[in-house]
Image (cartoon, rainbow, N blue to C red; front, side, top):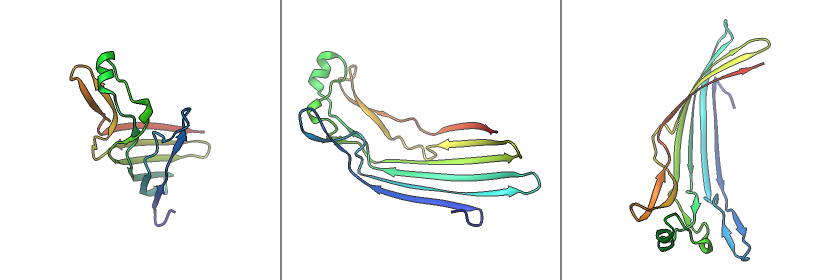
Length: 160
């Protein structure tokens, strides 16, 4: 709801996601992270003379880690690539995921069209969340690939 130029939203989800494979065994899916919590909020103010709106908003996401399949180190070494234990599909879970984003907007409204200019700073806190695991043939062990840190994104949107 927008009240005195402020708005916010909070959502919490608790869930499970499973599938039954061809071997008739029920397993977790990759996305069975069990919980997700979102907070989004912001503030907008308007320049009444010029029909321009400025805004700042923030978003925070806290969720359980994604599921993954354990890596067979011996077979990976022989094949010189990542080989997983299919029989244990998605039986392991990554660490919980946390990310914060910040957005600045400038919107110009006209009768038949409008412009939106935005600067998004994704992963503002710079959390190095896990992306995936793989077998590193040079280190001869399972390695963790992290997601990228803070990412600034500028965008322009024209609607007519």
